[in-house]
Image (tube, rainbow, N blue to C red; front, top):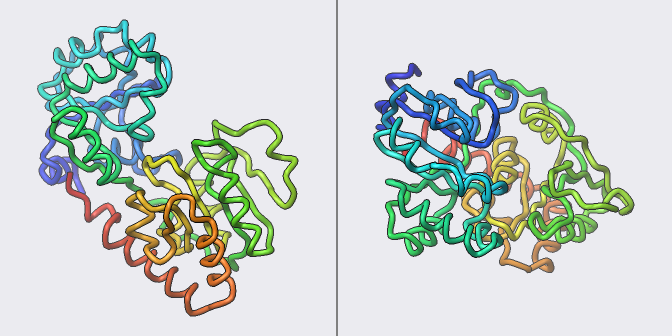
Length: 316
Protein backbone atom coordinates (compact mmCIF):
# COMPACT_ATOMS: atom_id res chain seq x y z
CA UNK A 1 0.00 0.00 0.00
CA UNK A 2 1.66 3.27 -1.08
CA UNK A 3 1.63 6.55 0.82
CA UNK A 4 -1.03 8.14 -1.35
CA UNK A 5 -3.38 5.23 -0.84
CA UNK A 6 -2.84 5.34 2.92
CA UNK A 7 -3.46 9.06 3.13
CA UNK A 8 -6.58 8.84 1.01
CA UNK A 9 -7.84 5.91 3.07
CA UNK A 10 -7.41 7.67 6.40
CA UNK A 11 -8.22 11.13 5.01
CA UNK A 12 -5.47 12.74 7.04
CA UNK A 13 -3.13 14.16 4.42
CA UNK A 14 0.42 14.89 5.50
CA UNK A 15 0.88 13.86 9.15
CA UNK A 16 3.39 14.76 11.85
CA UNK A 17 3.46 12.93 15.20
CA UNK A 18 4.99 14.34 18.36
CA UNK A 19 6.08 12.40 21.46
CA UNK A 20 8.72 12.76 24.16
CA UNK A 21 10.98 10.41 22.16
CA UNK A 22 14.27 12.05 21.27
CA UNK A 23 14.41 11.14 17.57
CA UNK A 24 13.08 12.46 14.26
CA UNK A 25 12.00 10.72 11.05
CA UNK A 26 9.70 8.00 9.76
CA UNK A 27 9.29 4.42 10.93
CA UNK A 28 9.88 1.63 8.37
CA UNK A 29 7.63 -1.42 8.27
CA UNK A 30 10.53 -3.68 9.27
CA UNK A 31 11.11 -1.85 12.54
CA UNK A 32 11.49 -4.47 15.34
CA UNK A 33 10.19 -2.00 17.94
CA UNK A 34 6.72 -1.75 16.41
CA UNK A 35 4.62 -1.06 19.48
CA UNK A 36 1.25 0.67 19.15
CA UNK A 37 2.20 4.31 18.58
CA UNK A 38 5.05 3.28 16.27
CA UNK A 39 2.66 1.10 14.27
CA UNK A 40 0.29 4.00 13.71
CA UNK A 41 3.11 6.33 12.71
CA UNK A 42 4.20 3.74 10.18
CA UNK A 43 0.75 3.15 8.71
CA UNK A 44 0.02 6.89 8.46
CA UNK A 45 3.46 7.56 6.96
CA UNK A 46 3.84 10.16 9.69
CA UNK A 47 7.05 12.05 10.44
CA UNK A 48 7.99 11.89 14.11
CA UNK A 49 9.48 14.79 16.05
CA UNK A 50 10.36 15.25 19.74
CA UNK A 51 7.62 17.27 21.41
CA UNK A 52 10.24 19.66 22.78
CA UNK A 53 11.40 20.57 19.26
CA UNK A 54 8.08 21.58 17.67
CA UNK A 55 9.01 25.28 17.68
CA UNK A 56 11.95 24.52 15.35
CA UNK A 57 9.88 22.78 12.64
CA UNK A 58 9.67 24.63 9.32
CA UNK A 59 7.81 21.90 7.37
CA UNK A 60 4.02 22.28 7.03
CA UNK A 61 1.60 19.44 7.85
CA UNK A 62 -2.10 18.85 7.39
CA UNK A 63 -2.39 17.17 10.79
CA UNK A 64 -0.21 17.10 13.87
CA UNK A 65 -0.85 14.39 16.47
CA UNK A 66 0.68 14.83 19.90
CA UNK A 67 1.06 12.12 22.52
CA UNK A 68 1.32 14.00 25.79
CA UNK A 69 3.84 12.29 28.08
CA UNK A 70 2.66 10.86 31.37
CA UNK A 71 5.65 12.48 33.10
CA UNK A 72 7.46 15.83 32.79
CA UNK A 73 4.15 17.67 32.57
CA UNK A 74 5.56 20.42 34.78
CA UNK A 75 8.18 21.06 32.10
CA UNK A 76 5.76 20.73 29.18
CA UNK A 77 3.26 23.11 30.77
CA UNK A 78 5.91 25.85 30.47
CA UNK A 79 6.43 25.12 26.77
CA UNK A 80 4.45 27.01 24.06
CA UNK A 81 2.89 23.74 22.86
CA UNK A 82 -0.32 24.87 21.17
CA UNK A 83 1.28 27.96 19.63
CA UNK A 84 4.11 25.86 18.19
CA UNK A 85 1.72 23.18 16.88
CA UNK A 86 -0.48 25.77 15.15
CA UNK A 87 2.50 27.22 13.30
CA UNK A 88 3.36 23.95 11.55
CA UNK A 89 0.04 22.05 11.43
CA UNK A 90 -3.33 22.99 9.93
CA UNK A 91 -5.13 20.78 12.44
CA UNK A 92 -3.91 19.39 15.73
CA UNK A 93 -5.00 16.28 17.65
CA UNK A 94 -4.33 14.61 20.98
CA UNK A 95 -3.48 10.91 21.13
CA UNK A 96 -4.43 9.17 24.37
CA UNK A 97 -1.55 7.72 26.36
CA UNK A 98 -2.49 5.40 29.19
CA UNK A 99 -5.89 5.34 30.94
CA UNK A 100 -8.13 8.37 30.57
CA UNK A 101 -7.88 9.21 34.28
CA UNK A 102 -4.12 9.26 34.71
CA UNK A 103 -3.82 13.08 34.53
CA UNK A 104 -5.78 13.29 37.80
CA UNK A 105 -2.66 12.10 39.65
CA UNK A 106 -0.97 15.40 38.68
CA UNK A 107 -0.87 18.46 40.96
CA UNK A 108 -4.01 20.54 40.45
CA UNK A 109 -2.37 23.23 38.32
CA UNK A 110 -1.10 20.54 35.92
CA UNK A 111 -4.53 18.90 35.78
CA UNK A 112 -5.97 22.25 34.72
CA UNK A 113 -3.19 22.68 32.13
CA UNK A 114 -3.95 19.22 30.73
CA UNK A 115 -7.67 19.99 30.45
CA UNK A 116 -7.04 23.36 28.82
CA UNK A 117 -4.64 21.74 26.35
CA UNK A 118 -7.32 19.22 25.31
CA UNK A 119 -9.72 22.10 24.80
CA UNK A 120 -7.31 23.64 22.28
CA UNK A 121 -7.22 20.49 20.15
CA UNK A 122 -9.31 20.04 17.01
CA UNK A 123 -9.68 16.32 17.60
CA UNK A 124 -9.03 13.68 20.26
CA UNK A 125 -7.94 10.12 19.39
CA UNK A 126 -8.64 7.49 22.06
CA UNK A 127 -8.15 3.76 22.75
CA UNK A 128 -11.57 2.37 23.71
CA UNK A 129 -15.27 3.04 23.25
CA UNK A 130 -15.48 3.92 26.94
CA UNK A 131 -12.73 6.50 26.42
CA UNK A 132 -14.85 8.22 23.77
CA UNK A 133 -17.63 8.62 26.31
CA UNK A 134 -15.21 9.97 28.90
CA UNK A 135 -13.40 12.51 26.74
CA UNK A 136 -16.56 13.73 25.00
CA UNK A 137 -18.13 14.30 28.38
CA UNK A 138 -15.01 16.03 29.68
CA UNK A 139 -14.32 18.31 26.74
CA UNK A 140 -17.25 18.29 24.25
CA UNK A 141 -14.58 17.77 21.59
CA UNK A 142 -14.85 15.40 18.63
CA UNK A 143 -13.39 12.04 19.65
CA UNK A 144 -12.39 9.21 17.35
CA UNK A 145 -11.26 5.69 18.06
CA UNK A 146 -7.65 4.91 17.15
CA UNK A 147 -7.56 1.22 18.12
CA UNK A 148 -4.46 -0.75 18.97
CA UNK A 149 -2.61 -1.78 15.83
CA UNK A 150 -0.09 -4.47 14.95
CA UNK A 151 2.13 -4.40 11.85
CA UNK A 152 2.34 -8.05 10.87
CA UNK A 153 5.13 -7.97 8.28
CA UNK A 154 7.81 -9.43 10.59
CA UNK A 155 5.56 -11.92 12.40
CA UNK A 156 3.62 -13.63 9.62
CA UNK A 157 5.81 -16.72 9.53
CA UNK A 158 6.43 -17.52 13.17
CA UNK A 159 7.52 -21.13 13.75
CA UNK A 160 4.98 -23.66 14.97
CA UNK A 161 5.89 -24.62 18.54
CA UNK A 162 4.41 -26.72 21.30
CA UNK A 163 2.79 -24.17 23.55
CA UNK A 164 2.85 -24.55 27.31
CA UNK A 165 2.82 -22.52 30.52
CA UNK A 166 1.17 -19.20 31.37
CA UNK A 167 2.16 -15.62 30.63
CA UNK A 168 0.66 -12.96 32.88
CA UNK A 169 0.52 -9.51 31.35
CA UNK A 170 2.00 -7.08 33.85
CA UNK A 171 3.93 -6.44 37.02
CA UNK A 172 2.74 -6.30 40.63
CA UNK A 173 1.46 -2.77 40.90
CA UNK A 174 -2.00 -1.24 40.85
CA UNK A 175 -1.50 -0.13 37.24
CA UNK A 176 -1.04 -3.68 35.88
CA UNK A 177 -2.79 -5.78 38.52
CA UNK A 178 -0.13 -8.46 38.41
CA UNK A 179 -1.08 -9.90 41.77
CA UNK A 180 -4.61 -10.70 40.55
CA UNK A 181 -3.23 -12.40 37.45
CA UNK A 182 -0.64 -14.33 39.47
CA UNK A 183 -3.19 -15.68 41.96
CA UNK A 184 -5.52 -16.86 39.19
CA UNK A 185 -2.63 -18.41 37.26
CA UNK A 186 -1.93 -20.76 40.18
CA UNK A 187 -5.02 -22.74 39.15
CA UNK A 188 -3.26 -24.11 36.06
CA UNK A 189 -0.49 -25.74 38.12
CA UNK A 190 2.23 -24.91 35.59
CA UNK A 191 5.15 -22.45 35.38
CA UNK A 192 4.14 -18.78 35.33
CA UNK A 193 6.05 -16.13 33.39
CA UNK A 194 5.88 -12.35 33.44
CA UNK A 195 7.46 -9.59 31.32
CA UNK A 196 9.66 -6.97 32.90
CA UNK A 197 8.06 -3.54 32.60
CA UNK A 198 8.70 -0.02 33.83
CA UNK A 199 6.49 -0.39 36.90
CA UNK A 200 8.13 -3.56 38.22
CA UNK A 201 8.30 -3.36 42.01
CA UNK A 202 10.98 -4.57 44.40
CA UNK A 203 10.66 -8.16 45.56
CA UNK A 204 8.69 -9.66 42.66
CA UNK A 205 11.51 -12.11 41.97
CA UNK A 206 10.99 -13.68 45.39
CA UNK A 207 7.56 -15.04 44.53
CA UNK A 208 7.45 -18.81 43.94
CA UNK A 209 6.81 -20.30 40.50
CA UNK A 210 7.32 -16.98 38.72
CA UNK A 211 9.96 -16.27 36.06
CA UNK A 212 10.66 -12.72 34.93
CA UNK A 213 11.59 -12.26 31.30
CA UNK A 214 14.05 -9.45 30.51
CA UNK A 215 12.84 -6.30 28.82
CA UNK A 216 12.81 -6.84 25.05
CA UNK A 217 11.78 -5.11 21.86
CA UNK A 218 8.34 -5.73 20.35
CA UNK A 219 9.45 -8.32 17.78
CA UNK A 220 11.31 -10.37 20.40
CA UNK A 221 8.28 -10.12 22.68
CA UNK A 222 5.89 -11.54 20.06
CA UNK A 223 8.28 -14.41 19.35
CA UNK A 224 8.52 -15.16 23.06
CA UNK A 225 4.78 -14.91 23.68
CA UNK A 226 4.20 -17.40 20.86
CA UNK A 227 5.60 -20.15 23.12
CA UNK A 228 2.82 -19.84 25.72
CA UNK A 229 -0.50 -21.66 25.95
CA UNK A 230 -2.45 -19.27 28.22
CA UNK A 231 -2.54 -15.53 28.79
CA UNK A 232 -3.91 -13.77 31.87
CA UNK A 233 -4.04 -10.00 32.20
CA UNK A 234 -6.39 -8.87 34.95
CA UNK A 235 -5.42 -5.24 34.55
CA UNK A 236 -7.78 -2.67 36.07
CA UNK A 237 -6.17 0.11 34.07
CA UNK A 238 -7.82 0.34 30.66
CA UNK A 239 -5.40 1.66 28.08
CA UNK A 240 -4.33 0.38 24.64
CA UNK A 241 -4.93 -3.31 25.41
CA UNK A 242 -1.85 -4.59 23.60
CA UNK A 243 -1.43 -7.80 25.62
CA UNK A 244 -4.92 -9.10 24.82
CA UNK A 245 -4.42 -8.15 21.16
CA UNK A 246 -1.00 -9.82 20.91
CA UNK A 247 -2.50 -13.00 22.37
CA UNK A 248 -5.41 -12.86 19.94
CA UNK A 249 -3.12 -12.54 16.91
CA UNK A 250 -1.28 -15.66 18.07
CA UNK A 251 -4.48 -17.53 18.96
CA UNK A 252 -3.62 -17.64 22.68
CA UNK A 253 -6.72 -17.53 24.90
CA UNK A 254 -6.45 -14.58 27.30
CA UNK A 255 -8.46 -14.02 30.48
CA UNK A 256 -9.04 -10.36 31.31
CA UNK A 257 -11.37 -7.76 32.76
CA UNK A 258 -14.25 -6.17 30.88
CA UNK A 259 -14.05 -2.56 29.70
CA UNK A 260 -11.07 -3.07 27.39
CA UNK A 261 -12.03 -3.25 23.71
CA UNK A 262 -9.31 -5.69 22.64
CA UNK A 263 -10.22 -8.07 25.46
CA UNK A 264 -13.98 -7.93 24.93
CA UNK A 265 -13.84 -8.24 21.14
CA UNK A 266 -11.12 -10.87 20.80
CA UNK A 267 -11.72 -12.94 23.95
CA UNK A 268 -15.47 -12.65 24.61
CA UNK A 269 -15.71 -16.02 26.38
CA UNK A 270 -12.82 -15.17 28.71
CA UNK A 271 -13.81 -11.68 29.84
CA UNK A 272 -14.86 -11.27 33.47
CA UNK A 273 -16.24 -8.43 35.56
CA UNK A 274 -13.77 -6.23 37.38
CA UNK A 275 -12.53 -8.06 40.47
CA UNK A 276 -14.21 -11.39 39.64
CA UNK A 277 -11.22 -13.61 40.36
CA UNK A 278 -13.47 -16.54 41.16
CA UNK A 279 -14.88 -16.69 37.65
CA UNK A 280 -11.42 -16.09 36.18
CA UNK A 281 -10.20 -19.21 38.00
CA UNK A 282 -13.16 -21.21 36.69
CA UNK A 283 -12.36 -20.15 33.13
CA UNK A 284 -8.68 -21.05 33.45
CA UNK A 285 -9.57 -24.48 34.80
CA UNK A 286 -11.95 -24.92 31.89
CA UNK A 287 -9.25 -23.95 29.39
CA UNK A 288 -6.93 -26.51 30.95
CA UNK A 289 -9.41 -29.41 31.22
CA UNK A 290 -11.71 -28.91 28.22
CA UNK A 291 -9.81 -29.15 24.94
CA UNK A 292 -12.85 -28.16 22.88
CA UNK A 293 -13.32 -24.99 24.93
CA UNK A 294 -9.65 -24.13 24.54
CA UNK A 295 -9.82 -24.61 20.76
CA UNK A 296 -13.00 -22.54 20.56
CA UNK A 297 -11.44 -19.63 22.46
CA UNK A 298 -8.28 -19.80 20.36
CA UNK A 299 -10.29 -19.85 17.12
CA UNK A 300 -12.53 -16.95 18.17
CA UNK A 301 -9.49 -14.89 19.20
CA UNK A 302 -7.82 -15.27 15.81
CA UNK A 303 -11.02 -14.73 13.86
CA UNK A 304 -11.97 -11.60 15.79
CA UNK A 305 -8.46 -10.21 15.52
CA UNK A 306 -8.79 -10.48 11.74
CA UNK A 307 -12.33 -9.11 11.84
CA UNK A 308 -11.68 -6.06 14.02
CA UNK A 309 -7.94 -5.37 14.25
CA UNK A 310 -6.06 -6.43 11.14
CA UNK A 311 -4.44 -3.45 9.43
CA UNK A 312 -6.74 -3.66 6.40
CA UNK A 313 -9.81 -3.08 8.60
CA UNK A 314 -8.82 0.27 10.03
CA UNK A 315 -10.55 3.53 9.27
CA UNK A 316 -10.14 6.43 11.68
